[in-house]
Image (cartoon, rainbow, N blue to C red; front, side):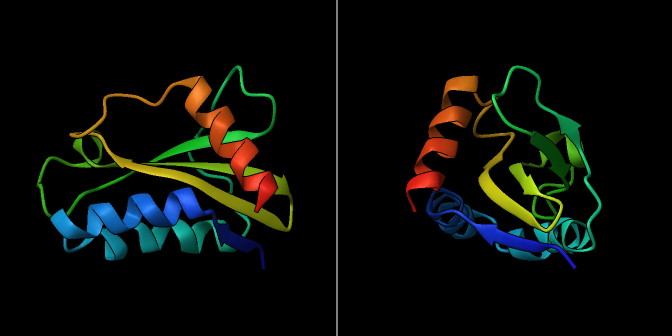
Length: 111
């Protein structure tokens, strides 16, 4: 079983999403379960200095499917450790910059 940890940036963003989208935790739970089972899902982010993936999740509060749902950015530290870096709603933010990902990684290392 893989250990999935949450960064403070992830928790802060999730808290903000909870205020507008009541089902956000339920929508993200299947993704977290897959990661805990050791499955690396989503697309690898090219250009990152470490192994980083982006995965899409549906938003039950807005019935637009995965394309209008959430994005989770996570880092694979080792086969046993995964770090959830960022989460955002596609309707709020079109994309996340490489600088933002690198900043999240740097902050996570300080925690």
